[in-house]
Length: 369
Image (cartoon, rainbow, N blue to C red; front, top):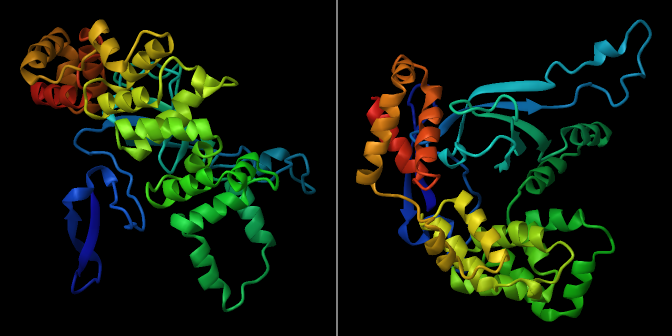
């Protein structure tokens, strides 16, 4: 929901914030903002109650200087090794939906970068992720800061404004990074419909500029997205599927060569969001759609992919899995909580991946308590 902080409560002696009193708008579930209304920022979070523990390895540059062979007198390249080239976070938390994904799966963790689950170390009950790409180039940022002239009295306010990563500031920054000759921008300049859609996607739908830019760089693609949005009005979720899954499959082909239209993609995203199928099953359905097997609803029914969300149906399966792994259950109760992922993986395997992961976690925790 969109949440507004109405009052900040501080400790009378220390001045530390102890409480935030807020109101929420019940019409904005899922972060959807009414037309004309904007928010200052979004908070990315996972549920502490339902999240899975994971080990996350944050890799950085191996050396502290660009050319480690360019050494000062009396030193060697070893003196320039970066002591923080790998930071290991042992008690990170991730969404339970990724708990049963195969090793080697890739993700973007919000605000942190791109990660891959470790092929050798990832195992049931032990989630390990390696960062492969950061979202920002800290080395370039540091170099730019060193070369920047001393700020004047007016500079701090200017820098603070430039640091805002929402709305127009984000759009301007993204535009500034584009090459001088930009085919998509040139096309929008000659096709008013696309230019209008770019403004609508960023202002009204509040899509990131990068997504809106891609979606309005081709008229057929923009109309495909609009058809998907008409079938299921969830702009960010639909845009994510179109810009990632659909375009990945298109490659050099035209979008009208697909055996389905945008509406089918919208209905597929809706099936995932409503919990009818999991995100992993969604990719299986999408592959079947590409193979010409029909509409997403038909494929789900034909393959029996409906997600199991009935606690009465899953509870006996959970009890059986826990009973079959009594030793690990005792280890979990003794404090080895990382085994939660193992039990969830066993239940998901027993249900052929059809069980609702959030419900499975709740039932497993209840059975192990």
